[in-house]
Image 1 (cartoon, rainbow, N blue to C red):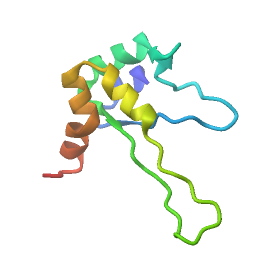
Image 2: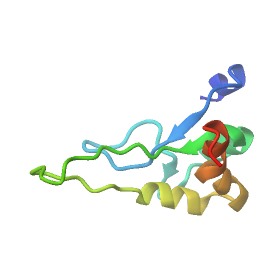
Image 3: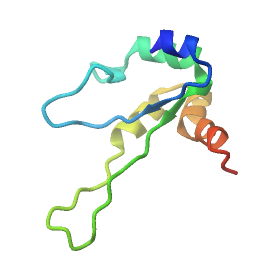
Image 4: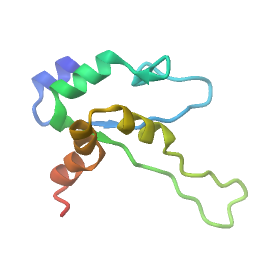
Length: 101
């Protein structure tokens, strides 16, 4: 990701931290329960290019198996980031990119 971010100044990264069935993936920002130092360094280097992903799938209220919206991983990530970086990743970058007041 670092090479991509350095090569493409208009590239942005959406982080969606959630538990997946069958285990995690290679892009999990935590290592042994704490934020991975490599992820932290990457986010500090490219502060304006990361944002929390909030895409969710919604189902009709009459659906037999409804899934709850789950955001504890994102909350944990934001709590572990330095305050200014958490503010940018949590909302400022998205507001700037999507021109939201």
